[in-house]
Image (tube, rainbow, N blue to C red; front, side, top):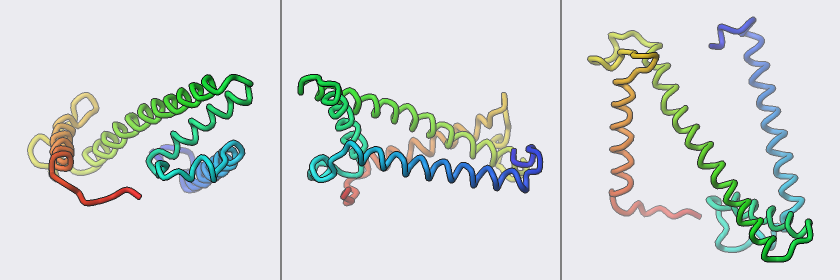
Length: 161
């Protein structure tokens, strides 16, 4: 797809640099704005806050702080915080689900379509309706097997800090 653009030798690197700058500025601005409404020593110092739930804790705090800024009572502010955290959780589930399916499908399709058919055994390289169906079924079976092995394979012995 890169070579379908006009002057890809110049356009593609400029696009990558522009996107990188936008992402860096966005992250920096987001961290700064979170610091404006979060009391780091009170909100994030609890032992129950870790890398897995810090986003929910911060968004819960944002909802609570918005509630107190609007002058609602403490129960309503706590409810606003809980709903803010739920909204973030729902949006993350939807975004990560979409990303999972995109990342699972797109690279496989590009690999199958970008290599010689003789490289793939049997019907694996067949493309039906724009999709490598047989390769996707094989990938599905492998992923399900890996999930089952991890889920029912016993203790992993790892701890999240």
